Image (cartoon, rainbow, N blue to C red; front, side):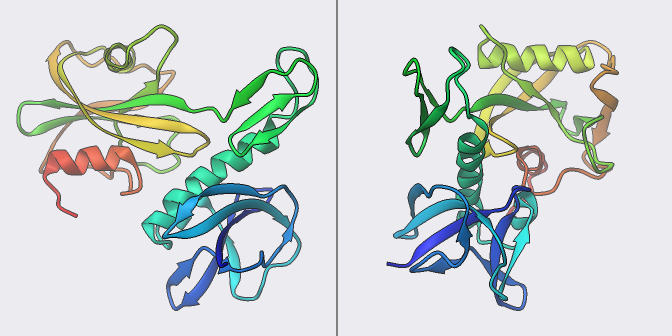
Length: 255
């Protein structure tokens, strides 16, 4: 039976197959068309067909090439990019978790999403790290945008951060905005979530409204933070991200 083969190299780049000019797909074949380096991980079926994840070594077929996972968003069908994210997370999990944090013995694969210690029997599952991202608005026309020190491009994004131990999601939203900008917010509303496999996050998107305070930039995290008018927006993240989804929703941009 034909199978989708989500194949990665040591740089975590994924194999894509060129079908036509500017048309790329995940390789779809009855047998794996590469030299496999790892065990095969079974993924949920895709478009009614089996899907597998592997790491590979050696040469690629002439029709195939490597792509960064983020870059593959712009060339793959969305459902294939989405599945590639899950494949990447599971490959990283099975590749990186080699020894038990409890007793130090070797860990081996138990299922496609878990590993078990050969010593104490402790079983762990592929981790997911929840993080929030929030669009803060002031009135009808202003939005709070921040430029992070971690951004590789000169765009402005939204306040974001990881959920900490003992926090509710809403507490995380309030804390992150206060820590990074010094602002107090109100009327927090959940938008939607997005798997973010860089490397294993779950982004939870929110809207909130400005309540009080003056901007005080957290210099350890941000280069700049300010209010922007909807009619004078700076460069913003590309459509792949939850940040862009929130901004487009606020702007009223239709797909």
